[in-house]
Image (cartoon, rainbow, N blue to C red; front, side):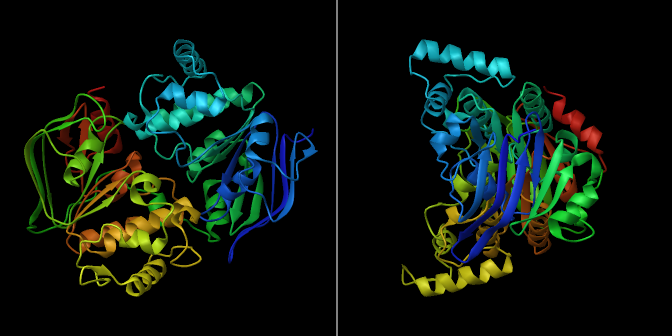
Amino acid sequence: MTPTLELSGIQMRFGSVHALRGADFTLHTGEIHALLGENGAGKTTLMQVASGLLRPDRGQLRVGGRAWPRLSPRAARRLGIGMVHQHFTSVPAFNVAENVALAAGWPVAPGRLRRRVRELGERVGLPLDPDARVEQLSVGLRQRLEMVKALAAEARILLLDEPTAVLAPAEVEDLLRVIRRFTATGGSAVLITHKLDEAMAAADRVTVLRRGEVVLTGPVAAQSAGTLAAAMIGEAAAPADQNPPATISAPPAGDRSVLIRVESLDVGRDGGIGIALRGASLVVRSGEMVGIAAVEGNGQRELLRAVAGRIHPLRGVREVARPVGFIPEDRSTEGLIPAMSITENVVLGSPGSDPWIRGGAIDWRAARARAVTLLEEYAVTAPGPEALAATLSGGNQQRVVVARELSRRPPVVVAENPTRGLDIRATAAIHARLRRAAAEGAAVLFHSSDLDEVLALATRVVVASRGLLVEAPPGATREAIGALMLAGS
């Protein structure tokens, strides 16, 4: 049978970085093919070649058996190739319907357009409000919109780059159900993911990239999570955080100073209408790691952003030690400015006490030297400090954000989904950095849509449900916390 998509001997360089080294990839009709590898292994680059966004230095691309030496994004779309990017491509100021029309080339006749978008969402199992502005959507709904845009363009080959990275467990299953239905009707899908259990459960075949080379390919049924992890990182065992504890870990001993205190806090919904958080009270002490467990849209985003000083509460008490190290959920729009260099992004948000601030001016030589040090300390793969943030893989972008925020040793660290879309090794490294910050006396407040990650990191777990906060009792199990998360649903 002729493959629906075939890439052979793909080579790709970005300056001194050899992103792909003769990579081969084959996708068949009706299959879900998992594409695995560490951050920077070349997964996204390979799929950007397949979608016409990048032209390889060497290699061949075939669609339905026909060679395409110069595939453009427009030609790829005509061939039925749709890419759902890890970083959202929708226009924030447009509504859902307008973004779908822009992606699919639909005429903008408001009434008919709204009906088409609503009908499409309901038909594929990803309903959306066509009149909702994208800037007011949660991250989970923005991810849903990216999928709907690809399906609206009548894609028959879906290239999905970390589509579940920001989704709650129920949302993940809904999306995977949509993908299975899509392939069952003759479509084909590539699923880039770092979640080994997800790849094992959803995919028919798997390919693993390591440092731009294919090191494993074949049926998923012939693999285990252990063999896939070993192929990805070149080691026999995955980091310890791949087996998180089933209960909350013990809090630190001894008296600690209070670094975060909120009382009776009411917070409006971020970017929308209504109250997201009602009467919230929370205390976090030095050395604690408090995890917020919640289903999307239950006030956790507003709580973290109120503590970080990004949004103002409507009423109540908020006392937070300054400065705050803030690791936002979307690194490409809030954590970094992609068009700026790594050095410039490191300088962003400088409190004025950094060594590269002299007499109110920036000493760029000192700033570059500091950026070089951070690249080494945080194992960021980049050509150098002058490389644009946009040229880094998602994982390396996240390392830059974490390096900038934690290197200043803030007394309070607030993190939203800090390991979103990261591989095994990068996840373990960021966990270690957050733990070190707490060990050095910081108060760490974080949320993850992955409950296992919350349990792996937190010394205390607070559940947000319908805008109310409830602290889980010491020793609470995963099942008990899950029940609290759903209690108000």
